[in-house]
Length: 383
Ligand code: ZN
Picture 1: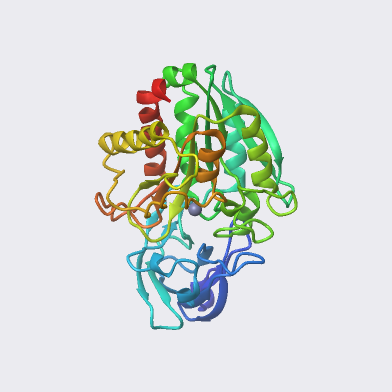
Picture 2: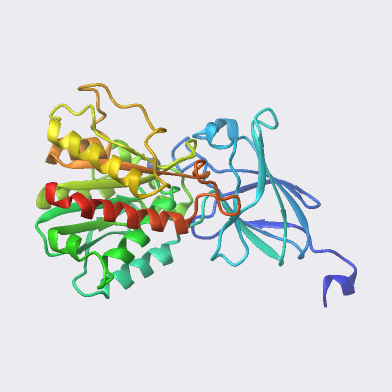
């Protein structure tokens, strides 16, 4: 019997009990839901949300996510539009507005359902199942091996894909901050290119790649923004990683100690800045002119290659000797003399090249990975 036959309208329902789900329902009044976001376990960080809203097709939903002035990055909300999908394949953006003075900071999402349910997220999710598919598909390619470097606190594998016949050790790592799902979309683009037998010959011949697509599978599954199962920010543990706090970092750094590192990229997302940018290692104690020159050449070459990358917006450089060696990029540059860098993609959009339908997206993250690797190919002989 349908709702029309009974004369009753099914109510709006909100759920988040699934992989990377995160929302708390405060109240539902007709087609308006008032919501808030759970903090990362044993931490005060919160910003990632992911939930399903179900109501009859054609319903105009008003979804109010409140309390956001206390979120990890309040500057992430002005100019931000929530990601939405009804088929969970293509993610678009829903009209959203931020009112800092309402209910402790409120993002209001307006969306009219096409079908009977829609999924909303801070960015297009990257599930644990998709991660396993990514590893399995890469492992099936010739010349690729999977090495499980260790286990997370919840017992999930920390996977490293190795490929290439060259002697330059290149490390690519992503999702230390698990809510930054664009980082694993980037990895999918990178692996797609590196495992294509008709592509990337020069890179595979020059380098040995070590690729960790998800440094923080527990935080990813738990719907965290920034931390692992114990509420630890992995990108503040690289100076002395401990097995009981950050085994995810410890096992990766131990493997790096075995392989050495010539070039490293740590892939992230930035909540506030509507642009793609790189951060380097300017403040490390042992910095060498050649090392820094190669980083800057890489950055400037990437900016010429793609309009989705720029050098105008970004983080301030650390002053000489003031680098934070608890962070991956600084530690790797200092410890191995590597050309190391942190890549940041936006949660919002690239405002130099805006896409009102999708904003920054999985598709653009994957394409950026190809441009990053092509830039590496251009200069790998000098690294
Ligand atoms: Zn990050």
